[in-house]
Length: 165
Image (cartoon, one colour):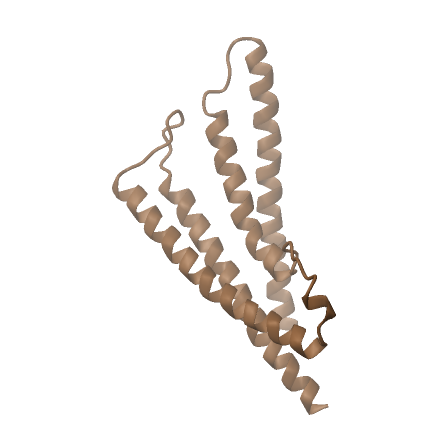
């Protein structure tokens, strides 16, 4: 990884982690306020919707972070007993497949957001439009796909560096 790539990765990690942290703090505050306001008979009407949006955004914003650090849940009972060359080939092919699936997933989310925007779907209590949140989810899925592409390319670059030694 070059110094420029490392700088970009660190900046992206810091920004995305900060956004996720802010959403988590927002969830804690909204939950606290909603619980206390329920005790006095005045619950926050849009607390459930805000919780849904914050949870969805936290998951989708976290996708590129988890992907870049390869922290997805993995079952490797069979693969762990294979030779390193086969493990590398399987990982590279999985990265390629995940890149393609990520592109399709992002595209489908983008189409869904367009349909939500065209039909002017809104949340029931807050009256916020749903489409902008789905657009953000689509973009973050595209970023995740780009991370898989980077992992795929860097696997070949790493192999060529090893072969050159």
